Length: 158
Image 1: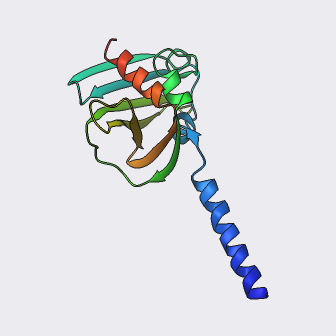
Image 2: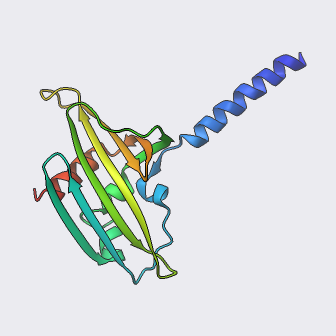
């Protein structure tokens, strides 16, 4: 009887730990910056698929807040789960690397790299999967794939 209870307790503990580890979080929560509200944020997007680079900079509030037109939806509306394995690429993928320099309260900058991978199963399909690498750790996208796609369109000037 005690062995049976301890097995159930171990299974329940394992399930709880997995649920805690894989709980969806926004990209912003994964970055967890200690921002200086008066600082300047810098962002560069290297669009691997289109061979196009764009850079932006501006006050932290205008660049990184949830209402910021370019980065706000990407950082605050996309939910990821992990970290899991690092992913190098995908079939028929849209790839873009996003490099951020986030102003910290101590006067330094937190650097972050975010690799956006949208993988289309086939070119004729509207369905696609999304995966994100943040600072060499992989994350499954649990919601917000449309925000990633919209960011890529805006970053490309569309």
